Length: 432
Image (cartoon, rainbow, N blue to C red; front, top):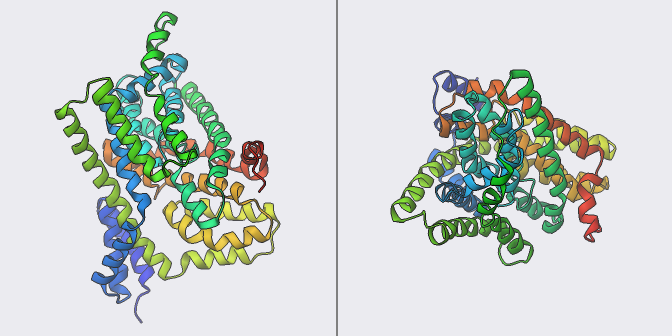
């Protein structure tokens, strides 16, 4: 009796993990094992899968936002934002952790991707926490990874645009609906940082004298024009969120090359070279995940589970709780993109029939998918930061769980109280 292809793929995953394959190579190899076991035309399927993957224009935003992040780092933009945040709250215990969260609130208004936030400005935060604050590597990466979840919640947001395409919901309403949850997430993460800092005796940050505040905040004025340009352009219909990634990279380079004049030809070449290397790491992870996702879709794993949930006779609240529990469980083994592109379209008709507002449902689902990005063992952001920083996954996994708690609590609050997401859209005339 021939072995089940999906079971062989799972077995291969365990074996390759024990052999310490790189994540991208491991996922790609597992996909090839499935294709071989299911007697598929490996060359044809891989070619079609990769071609269809790269037809998703939204993927262009990832290398562009990574370029923007590296340009901000090289042009001292990220440092200026960091310094302003440090002056505001850095004097607290575990101050560098608080500054990381606050900086991500600002950076999130310039980026639409959690991965690019983590790989860009997140690298500045990790470096500062490890070198200045002597934070353990796993803890520094965990704080940065959890904070990067703010990226797709605080507008602009690439996942929100994808969800709007799938559901027909208003992009503008989705962006407005993400503001309050994003700020609530930031507060909850800072409370967790404070608790961890007190429990583990993390040092107090260095206080910035009040006499230095005008200079510190004055140096950050020009970088703060970036979110104004991005959000104004998106809400004004000048460019799409995906195009905003290129605008962010261009504006960051203009600031560094023409205003601060610290991005000369050599520095600019170094920025492009570093961005190319980092983009290769990230895109290899994403492309490899598409091969595994093909196997899961072909076997009907996602569709079967989603159909089962949709077929249950549940109340609107019961339906949302069941869907989110399922997503939280699947997020430990599946990529967030799979759940967004495969599960959500199957669940939308049920959500509509139960009278659930699709904007509210979208924000809740996207937050759930962000939690999946930082949940072991599959969390993509964890793999990316591990690859970029050299911090072993076991150290990151040991620290990240405590930061998943406030994310899950905020998720539950959003489910129970829809007005937390819909209040701002209602204020601006959204009817639902």
